[in-house]
Amino acid sequence: MGNATSVRPELLERLRAPRGLVVAGLLSGTSCDGVDLALCRLHLAPGGEDLSPPELLVHATRPFEDLPSGAFLRARLLRMIDGHCDSLAALATAHRDMALACAAALERVEEETGLRAELLGSHGQTVWHHDGIAELRGATLQLGDLSTLAEASGRPVVGDFRWRDLARGGEGAPLVALVDHLIFPALPRPAAILNLGGIANLTLLGRERGELLAFDTGPANCVLDTLARLLLDAPCDANGAAALRGRVDEALLARWLVHPYFSRPAPKSTGRDTFSRAWVEGLVAAEHATRDDAPRLLATAVELVARTVATALRAALVERPQLVPKGPLVLAGGGVRNPALVAALLRHAGPLVEAGEVGPAARAREGLLFALLAARHVAGIPSTHPGATKARAGGVLGLYAPAP
Image (cartoon, rainbow, N blue to C red):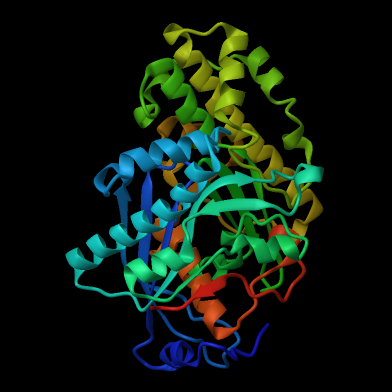
């Protein structure tokens, strides 16, 4: 742990003050559907070893289509995520424009709420991640230039969080486990938290602060949403309706489960570079699938997500029996709105509870992550943890861009 000495003393003093510091966490997730934003009030905990649990002030998502030039930006980002970069100019301008989209989203939320953030923690948009491939380890790419965001917003910004973790031998993901003890302060320990975003990731929290294991289990919404786009011409399988009409194809599922990622030991991370649109297109092409096959393929994909989560959880608990959760598996992320996926997880992973029922701020979990990491950065508090990402402990995450 650090001693909360900071090269940003004015911000550190606000963290120590009774009023606290208002921090905004900003990101665009794996689905690339808009800027997710959480404004929270943060305080330095007594003793200065960490922050106190955040007070969530507002959580909002601004779709790219509602932001200036956002639809065009989203189209460019999705092409890059799918492995197509038209030019270095396209990459550089997307880096700039993602920052401007974050600034526009923040401006709108602040106008609507009357709140004003004093510090921003920005993740931007991941367009490439190493996915554990040996020759690519230690590299990642998030777009959303920090200097542009600082100038456009008039606020100091901390971002570029993953690189220090990578430089210390970590996976660079999943980072949210580093602050889950603050987001879920009242959750009985040991505890298991599953995030169902584009990728599914697990956090296992032990009774002691240092008892932690976190890793990506494999694809979640990224495979379901891509199947919906390819077979239903829709952005997602709304309410899991098509999957609920289908039956699991066990022979097909067995072929999908041989993917080498599922057998890798934790901690591990992955993303849409491995479980990409091209990967899903290959699954569809191998089946010569048409719209009529959508229920079968979506039901099978839901089962893939649920079984890989359950298998990974059981394997982790065999290795770390001290982390066997006292209560139900806690569900977070957009996948909780898919009844087909939740039902499959209930069959394979046992009792479930939504994150918002045990952590009132948890619906803003990823936004809170980057707000907390930004505040930790300005206070000089280390965040890296070998159980979360394999990184050596003691690293302060992020880079700082001062206000203009």
